[in-house]
Amino acid sequence: MKKYTQLTCEQRYHIYLLNKQGYSQTFIAKSMGRNKSTISRELSRHTGVRNQFWGAWN
Image (cartoon, rainbow, N blue to C red; front, side, top):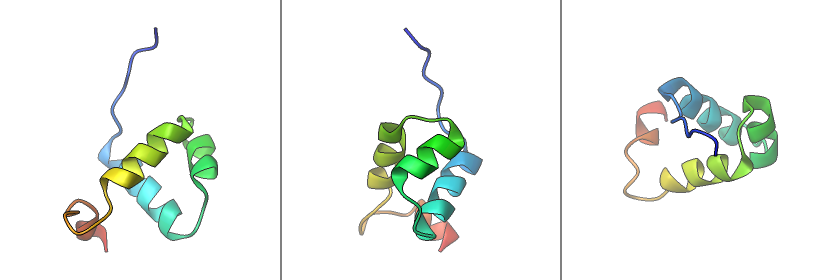
């Protein structure tokens, strides 16, 4: 069983930037060496009205 490692703030910012530039979740995942579902979960966590995490970078 693989050990889970959390995303760093820098990785989250990288995901945010690439997503904002229109790159696909698959591309983002491959470029970071992460699973596509990790990227999908991260993006879905930080969308919507209650999102304050991404707001700092907008």
